[in-house]
Structures are given as C-alpha cells and as structure tokens.
Length: 277
Image (tube, rainbow, N blue to C red; front, side):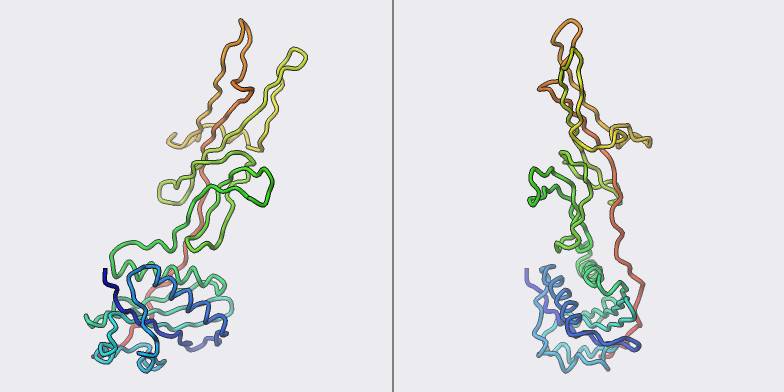
C-alpha cells in the first residue's frame, strides 16, 4: 500500500504557557512521530521542505495551494500550553488534496503522562482517516514470571503497547493463568490454581496449603452466574472407608474479575482555524 506523505509540524507554545524545556519538546515530538510511523500509513516528510509554512502565525490558518506544492497529502499542526502540571495540546489535521480540515481537537493530561495524550491523538488520527479504531490506548494482558526471583510463580500483568506502565495485577504466589478481558473491557478475568499437600500422620490426614489465595476466590460469583468459580476436587477410592487425593495434591481453580485502568482524558474541540485557499 502506498503511504501518504504527512507533514508533522513543530510544537508551538500557546498564550499563557510556560516554555517547554528542550528535553520535554524532544520527548513529545519523538512520541508523536513514533506513533504516526507505527500506524504504517504515513511517510513523514523532512521538516526543511515545509518549515516556511509551519510558523506560529499560521497555526490557525492553512494555505492549501502552497502546501500542495510541497507534495504533502496531510498536514498536522500543534500548539501546546503547559500550566503547572498540566499539558494541553491543540491538534489540527488537514487533507491537502481535498482542501479540508479533518479535525481540530484539544487534549489535556499530566505533563509526565504526555505519552498517553499522544496515544489518544494518534488513535483519533487513525480513526478519522481509516474509520478503524486505534490501538494506542489499549492494554496488553499477559502472564509473566519474575526472572529476578528464584522459583517465582506465574502472575498476571498489564502493560501498554509501548511497553510502559507494567503493572502486576495478581500476587497470589501460585499458578495464575488464562487472563481474558471481561465484557466492555472494564475488567479482567483469570484462573488461579491452589495446591495443597495431604499427608497421613498418626492415622489422620493433615492438609497444608501452598498458596496465599483467599478462600472467597472459590465461591460462586453472586451476580448472573456467568462468571463463577470452577472447583475441582477429584478423589479416587483406595479402600472401603478412605479417599486420597491424586498424586497427594488437591487442585482448586478459581475465576475472578479485577477492574482495569481508566482511559486518557479528551476535552473537546480546539479553537477553529481559518481556512484559506
């Protein structure tokens, strides 16, 4: 598929903003360009080709004819405002051959969470151009083992597609597998396995738990019953009045739900631009 040429503008400070440091601008610009490259839709143009058109006084204006001479298919412009710990980014996306504004939107988030703001913008760019929902704000649910710990068990983790915000969801100290998103993507389900050793001492059996799983994990969910615990206590007969656990282990499999993380905040439309031919 032929990629569209995209002119990614500079980050221009807006009225009332403190000036961003060179490091802040570099991180923000790098995140924007990396996200747009990742969509695999665009060929990002060299800024020297259009720098004379990407000036602060033309942030809210677009000269379609002059931009057309650069060979750009799309132009995206930015204005930022940093007040305290908040970052606001005004974004303007234009279709140059079609001579139309695709969208103009303002995003707000914490300065140190700038990448979440960029991911929200990238999702909107993808949605507006292709009609498909983006993946940048999604989270990956996975099973991992901490290799820094000896004999560590498998636990459930969440992570962003860019590898940030790795979060350990479970600390059951047991075999935890089968994570899945719940309806609507607002919760997750998982299976946890509890093992217990059953030994005969002085004519009686003693059970020793090897996990820290709460017993309530193995009760049925009181809702519709769709998400409930499955309990497996298979036994085999060894004598007229005795039972024994297979391989001296009892296995309980519990299924539960845990809430997921909130999404990035989007505040609405940015100031309308004045489009000129």
